Image 1 (cartoon, protein in one colour):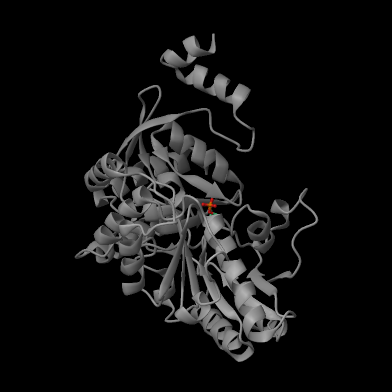
Image 2 (spheres, rainbow, N blue to C red):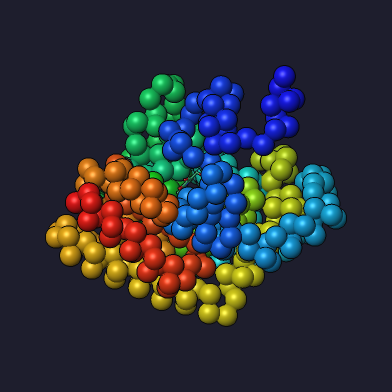
Amino acid sequence: MIENKLNQPMNTEDIINMGKENVMNTYGRLPMALVKGLGTHIWDSDGKEYLDFVAGLAVTSLGHAHPDIVAVIREQAGEILHTSNLYWIPSQVKLAKMLTANSFADKVFFCNSGAEANESAIKLARKYAKEHHGDHKFHIVSLKNSFHGRTLATLTATGQTKYHQGYAPLPEGFSYITMDDQTELEGIINVDTAAVIIEPVQGEGGVYPVSKEFLQRARELCDQYGALLIFDEVQCGLGRTGKLFAYEWSGVTPDIVTLAKALGNGVPIGAMLATDKAAASFQPGDHASTFGGNPLATAVGCKVIEIMTGDGFLANVNTKGDYFQNKLQSLADKYNLQTKVRGLGLMLGLPVGEKAPAIVSECCANGLLINCVGGKTLRFLPPLTVSIEEIDQAMVILEQAFEKMI
Ligand SMILES: Cc1ncc(COP(=O)(O)O)c(C=O)c1O
């Protein structure tokens, strides 16, 4: 019975029904399935075409089916997919070199997701603090409204109580302060602080760039008290804001940066980048991941970094980001929303109030995928390869939705 069903082509209704029967109910999903993509375009299982301004939540930053990424995956699959970290992995070594050559970092640990990268960072910070200062130093400070992942430690670092509910007892030693409130920052960091973890641009919290002054003060206080400064760039890193790393906008150098999402353009990968001083607290056996940095994921990662650091790529992201931001602001002004577009580069948020989910649905019905965060802010994360024409097309669909809904 099951075999017969699986061998038949499935229509959208079959997919949804079989999903409801067999997949754990952890996501509020739209009643659609996406089955094919090319660049900024994506098609559902009914053959309907959309402009994809979600990009798998900042993952497919080079667009769908990028020819160079497809070629690397095919080639690597024909060579070797997995070996284990019992042995050296050439593409892992190369990707680590590319990441350290283009950042503050000296060493890289590879894993498979954003949560895992942050979990690694928290573990490294605690180990470092114990080794350098003693057992009392284990406190982790994060921002209210932040998002750092769904493992027990990373959801505890996430400064939104809704994610904590039902999972007590949570790991101890986590506290939260208000973004850009220097008084709270100064009041919380002390000799017991192991690390401060910050998204330079909050993503799930509503697309909020953290001020340069706040990041600078966090750096000063971390230095004063021997704590590590961790930047979670899982969403805002890797070209998304118009620089390879979002921290570059602030001029503040962290001790650790975490990456995931766009690093594999859809192939799962995570990475924790650290200074030599911090990284030295991890020795063989201290931390590991079976799939972490495997040949396939890191071969793709190398191609992603090669493309993103190529001539004009990031300059182009800035040009298109400014263009898109201006268009969104003009639309907001035209509809008298009295609101400001937030974000940097091609990570943009437009607060529209309670109508946000209805606008997302209307755009989807008319062939534009966007999503909303916090129930009130439209979030735009197009591929970094999006064209000006595609931005214009998206604006037409968005304006139609505004016309109907606002
Ligand atoms: C800033 C940030 N950190 C961590 C994560 C968790 O990443 P993952 O879902 O790959 O575990 C996310 C996911 O949205 C994120 O936006």
